[in-house]
Length: 422
Image (cartoon, rainbow, N blue to C red; front, top):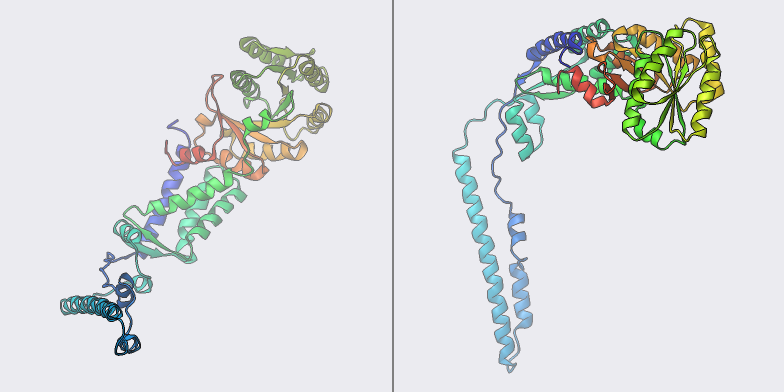
């Protein structure tokens, strides 16, 4: 899928260049952080050795414990041993303190002239091993404010709009990037584009992940038959998407019946019938011009009578501006109570697809989307925008002409494709 979103990647490249220029102008070198071995403190030395009783305390104890004349010799012997132990502990502490002080004095004698430190280093707390390792890679730091980001963010917004993103979606992404980068100090390496790419990835991921749910888990737990209605305009791959979904469900071990609800075009019934024959599934149909709500109702009743797991209903391709056909769609959904209504459109339609999805969502509403021809989409605008605008998730991508070319939508995979990663 190398050609996918190549225009989008090109626009991102322009933005990254503008951003890198800003960073290069603002970045300051960071001195390598060297962590010296700090001599152990007196307190830590004393912690390693059993607590030592102070001299006056020892003398007092000895005076108390020295027996009067005529006392038993064993007691005198015991006190003497304790005294020796205490003296030995004290000697160890004294020796170690002297050694630490001597080492400290030697270091101070050879201490180099203090070099000029960066402002941020002066404010930094003690640096641990992990931070030291990072400093060796991220050898520059930059602080960005809103003024610094004005030009790069303008480039980003223009690039997003030219990639067919809806205005509100572009604004949301730009705002997210700005919030991530403004007013913070960033450590950066030689590739200044990485810092913005990570911020942009997160912003787009948040947008395309709107209200995601697992299609397979959802239908698995629904009472059977599960009824799915497919809506959209003609020529966007709706019937082909139904056949791909049928193939996918059959592979998962489910049974399927199709409903030829597009009675507006005689050719649509024949087209769906060809797919039904190839896939070996039953199709319920009436004559051309019949009430589509009646056809779909009959298909649901057939599925119930024959213990079929899924009913996939085709509907007439209609423009969202055709009020009569939209009213017919509402009747179908009212009579047959679908479990899912899936909007189908082509990714290459860009903002037109987003506008149609919003109109269908207002009329029906929809539960999710399938975007076809994603393998031919150079801009990626519809794929990014549609979930955000409708508030409903993308469920699948059409990635080719074969029955198996229906890819379940995964936000992380999609973002990786946008940025040219496998």
